[in-house]
Length: 267
Image (cartoon, rainbow, N blue to C red; front, side):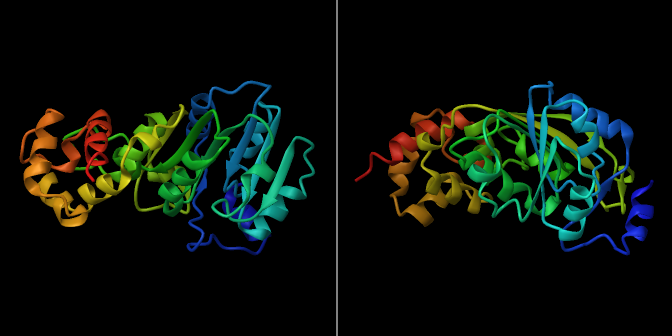
């Protein structure tokens, strides 16, 4: 059955508040499954499973699926399917205690509400027991920001946070017509291979200050928020090999690490 028909049977409309855009494109579903590099030993966490467009194909390829669904009616719809390998958790993925809900080693595969992209990634990156791999279907513009190279106007704080925790790669663009109801923007499948976090190597107040004032020079932005003399900042910026009037988006992740060491040495 089509999502529109299932929703009609449930006497339900897609929720704009919950960002419900159901995946209806078989090629996009297959691309998600391939991107996740699945095996029959895997446990997969799916966030926002909706009507199960990804859930049921996942169940044929992995050992277990834990589906976290905030919409109680849709959570109940999936629960009533009584599939042995499927565990349905009703709740907000940003608030659920994952240490309780998710045992052992796992991956995340999900078509998520676009509005939770960055908060969800922050939660994932901060977990004591993060997933080994994350495959997300998110807004194209958000994906572009997450992989933006140094010098790109799209580069920002989320880019640097991603680089501190994972190797990210966009594997497929997904047109807006692949969803019901159709959103106004296209999407991308992005894969994150988690690695040991380097968060502790970065002085995040400096990164936040730099991108808060990204239209200004990095020295001016840091001076404004951190109150470090511009002359000292100019020296630090030269030490890491950047030009005096560079902006935050021009720095590589390694530049931020090097700059952080210099900034934290200031008494």
